[in-house]
Length: 459
Figure 1: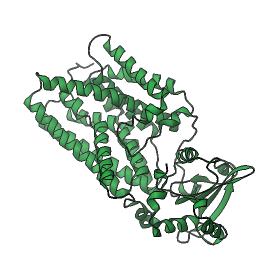
Figure 2 (figure 1 turned 90 degrees about the vertical axis):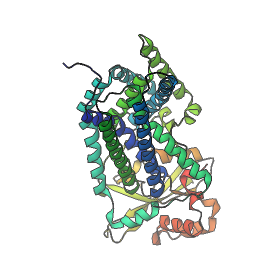
Figure 3 (figure 1 turned 135 degrees about the vertical axis):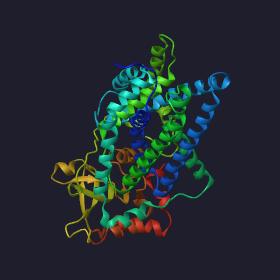
Figure 4 (figure 1 turned 180 degrees about the vertical axis):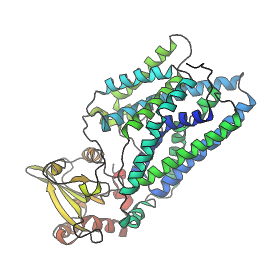
C-alpha cells in the first residue's frame, strides 16, 4: 500500500495525459480526415496544438500568481464544472457510438450508457494519485497498440500511386471566404476545448512537485499528441483505418471518468446526484435526436452522425489485406422492377499495379457481393456516384445512410443522371472502354464544379 498524497511523478503525469487523451485524439483525427483536405487538416491540427501550448503557459502564469482566494478561483471552479458536465456527455456519446459501431452492434444504447456511467463513477471517485497509478498500469494497452496500428497503416499505403492519391486530397476544394475561415477557427477552438486538460490538472489541484519541470513535461506530451493526431490524419487520408478498439475504449473511459471527477461536487451524496443528472442529460439527448444534432460540441464541420445510435448497425471495420479487397472507383445507383441496383466499377489489378483497368459488377445489395464469392467492397478511394434513380425511391437520407454504412468519403462526387442525360447515355454505352470514375472526376475538374458535387455538400 502507499500513502495518498495527491502527488505524481513527471513520468506519471505523462502517462496520465497520454492514457486519457490518446483515444479522443485518434478518433478526431479520423473524423477530420473524412471531411477535410490535407492542407486544411494540417492547419487545423497545428492551431489546436498552438492553442494548447499558449493556454498551458497562461495557466502556469496564473498558478504562479496564486489562486487560493478571490473571485478568480470561483470563476475557474464554475467554468471547470460547466465544461466537465458538457464534455462528460460528449465523451459518453463518442464511446457509445464507437462501441456500437466496432464492438457491440445492436446493443441497447440506454444499457450502454448505464454501464459506461457505472464504471466511470467508480474511477472518478479516486484522487489524482490513484487515477495516475491506474493510468501507469493501462498506459501500455492504450498507447502501444495505437502506434502499432499506425505502423501497419504505413505499410498499407499504395506507394505506386502515392503522388496521384495525395494530389487528389492535398488542396482545399472550398472557397477562401471569411465564412469558411470562421468555420475553421471555430473547429480549432472547440476541438481545443474538448482536448485540453490543463485547466483541470493545474488550477483545480496542483499535483506536481516542481512547476517548471512539470511545465516542460506537459509541453512534451502536447507535442507527442500533436504528432499522433497529425500522422493518423495523414494515414486516414491515404489508406483505410485500422481501429485499435480496446485502446480507444479504455482511453475514452478514462476521459469520461476525468470529466466526471472534476465536475462533481465534493460534498457527501452530491456526487451521486451529479452523476444521476449527467446520466439523465445524456438520456434526454438520446431521446431527442434533433437536439442531439445541434449539440456537436466541438465542430461545425465534422458533422458527427450520432443518428446511427437509433438504428441497428452491423458495420465493423476490420484489417483486411489489400489483396482481399475490391476497390470501388465509381458506382451507379439505378432502379428496376426488382428494386434498386448498384453497378460498381472495380479496380482490376490482374495485369499488375502499373496497368490498372476497370471491371463492372451489378448487385442488388452491396453486402451480397462478398457472400457470393467476391472480395470485400472498399469505398475508400471512390471518385463518383451516379444517381440514375428517382428521389422518391432513393432520397438524400438514403444516400447519407449508405455513405455512413460503407464509409464513403465526403469528397466523393455525386452526379444525377437527369442533369446530364446525353453525356450519361454516351458514357454508359462505352463502359467497357473507360473508367467512369476517372471520366466524371475530370469532367467536374474541367467545369470547376467539384465543390458543389461533393457528398459532404449535398443537402
